[in-house]
Length: 84
Image (cartoon, rainbow, N blue to C red; front, side, top):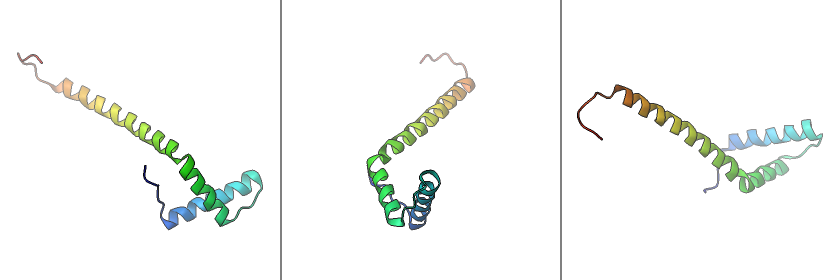
């Protein structure tokens, strides 16, 4: 799996969220460097789990849509003497 890259604006937003979480939930102020290091750690060590879950969720949605389309096509099929 290729490394997930974020734009500078996205990374700034994520860093800000991590810093605010640490202050609100842990009553601990961390700097930008520490927050960025933590984000990189989670991205490298557990990011694939979240990525794969997203893929599986997308696959389930797609399979449900394809099943629905297949059912819809079957409903509009015209009767013939041809047997599949």
